[in-house]
Image 1 (tube, one colour):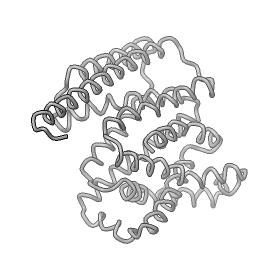
Image 2 (cartoon, one colour):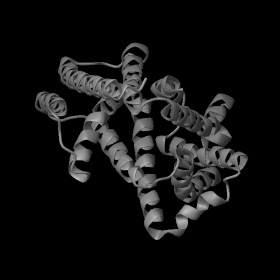
Image 3 (cartoon, one colour):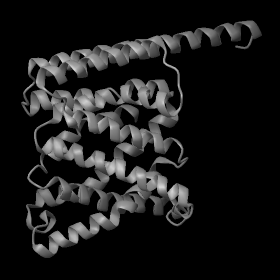
Length: 297
């Protein structure tokens, strides 16, 4: 389940590539509308379709959900735009940076302390970003905005204490009025792809809800059954597949300066992974010693 979730997210560029001829804002609007429909059907099947709205009675929680909705829909829009404009490699860089940016957010918002592996990782990633900035006169705004939006989304979600299905439903439900009005205006003007485009495009637009929901359900199932550190290792499947698809399937260019930046970020992530593995190993040895002391098999 964990592997399948990250693999599906990694193959997302292939899905949204076929929707490249549709404007990114319309694709986003359909993704919101059909996600709400899919998630509501799922909640109804679970018998939770009425109780889920109780979370909106708290003004504080409603405000947090509104902010989360803004962050995740913004992330979706930029990602869809990246695929449509043949910048999948830039998007993959953003998701490679994401776990590194989460370290920064933990430092800023939760006063977490850096271990030496995290510090080296941050320094290497910073050098890579700085190198590309100097060599190319700037760093891809797509590569920066994706982890920033998703990271802030994660910070808010950390305190919501809602299951993933209910949370995503409420986040998309909050964005539903804007998305619905936008699609109605397009329909009145005769410019909505769902009404005027090919059957394939129509099916893909409607299917955006299921495509959004399925990996989320697999992720939730995997997270319940696997240790969080294992899920942490699996997360690198997604940007790796995105990078491979952008380079080998879409034929996007990877100039030497971008490659150098990637190498710094990849090396930083490798250091981080080694640090995580070492920490897990130390914890297991400690547990084994405690078991040996107590004589518990």
